[in-house]
Amino acid sequence: MKPSIPEPQLEKTTCLLCGSMHSTLYQEGADYFMRLPGTFYLVRCASCRLLYQNPRPPLDGIDHYYPDHYGSYSSTHVGLYAHPGLAGWLIRRAQHHRCRLLDQAVVAAPNQTRRLLDVGCASGLFLEAMQHYSGWQVEGVELNQQAAQITSKRLGIPVFAGPLEAARFPDATFDAITLWDVLEHLHDPMTSLRELRRILKPGGALFVRVPNAASYVAKGCGRYWSGYDLPRHMTAFTPRTLSHVLQQTGFDRLVCRYASGSYIAALHSLRFALDNSTFNAERAALIHRLLLHPFVRATVCLPTRLADQVFGGSNMEVLVLAHET
Image (cartoon, rainbow, N blue to C red; front, side):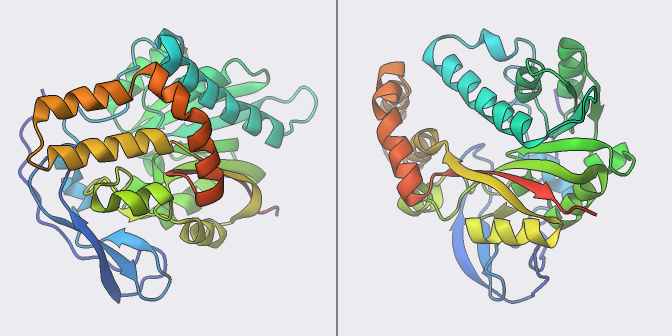
């Protein structure tokens, strides 16, 4: 059991992209996910329009907002192919779609093994899927020490337990690097992306997924949108600001960008709104379970995908290549 960590004092920060001190309030809300106390604020930079949390929990106090039951570690012991039914099929389908895109984008020389690093690999589902594609050597970085150890043992791969910068990988080590729902959590995303650029080979691929604050789900759900996830998300990206961040750190050759995850995001957002109202808690849980039913999810799959393409989905998945030198 993790020891009780006192609530940290929030700190002021400048814009994480351009350094401007000037901003306006964009959104305020509570911790609707973990339901920890506090009110948190998302502001918009007056200069570059980046949405970022200010004030925010300091780096040395952020653990307070990641209790033991938070995270993507439910599959650490069992892996990608233990998920049953439609939900499992959808997870595997999404993972293999990403794998195919990456496999096609990074072309290896004859008899050359391509190296992949997954930053924030959690339970290793993406790395497990990538092991089905020939010519790849995969490894991960994960802050959670227990998850790192279990994933490393289960998949038989190296997983560094700790922050990316502490791994001290040599220059131009990897052919591809992935970050699934990681970039928005970082206190200094520009510095981390420059570190990724350093350890990525010239022309290598970076594949990123972040919540899309310009999506129709974000606009419709307001402060309850699950993509804000205050106070854990330091930044809320839009297609414009994500492109700016990537270009400023050496990633400007776009391979593809597409939307995903809108139905689940909308469902979680609805649950947050119901939980924060006078609505009966048991009834709210029942509605949530019904909307998660495979039949309902199958029914809304095609309309949701069409809406994502037209209006911009709740998640952005972007594959870019690094500058050639």
